[in-house]
Image (cartoon, rainbow, N blue to C red; front, side, top):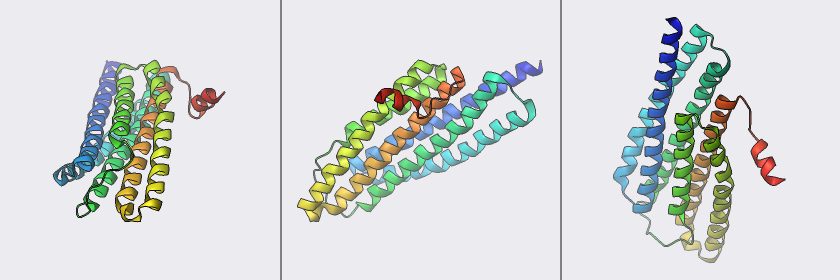
Amino acid sequence: MPRINFQQQLVALKDKLLAMAALSQQALSLALEAYLTGDLALCDHVKTLEAAINAAERDVDEMAYDLLAKEQPMAIDLRFILSVIKINGDLERIGDQATNIAQRTKSLKEVPQIELPIDIPDMGEKVGVMIRSAIQSLLEADARMAEEVLAMDDEIDEMNRLVQADLVEMMQRQPETSTQALNAIIVSRNLERSADHATNIAEDVIFWVRGSDVRHKFSLTQAD
């Protein structure tokens, strides 16, 4: 009977983490929409979501640490709880990236919109796919899907590098565009960091399911 209760608690912990993941995804999506449309009301919504994400992070940590202390889990259950604690932190930081983008959007309120030689919507869509896939791999305990997330990260890194290079060149040629260009660089950087957090989540799913630590190994394999 106690073991059944423990498994129920693990399910509750996973459900709480998935609910937090939904908040983080929504915050990033709304922040990007706010930046692309200039809708400042969405920025306020992101701020509200940030508070909810922070509260959820505390709840998940408390649930996870209680399980570690009271149940002393072994093997795959221990790996699951340890992974939840790490994933929890990455989800909170995705919320932070969303807040940063919302703040950038607000700082552009009085600045004229201009066309930039970059594709932030495409980058945002790809990052969104990474995050959704990482969370889906957690939901389904699917290590192969998690590996697919790892493979996507290099493309986002390259997109961020090109954004920075193109916008620095633009600022040199047209200094009057510096405010818009610098904000776009920051938005791109926050999207790239969100992709890094999705990668971290995927790595933790692989650790939970397979018991293998793939941090830093996947990129080395790809480079060979």
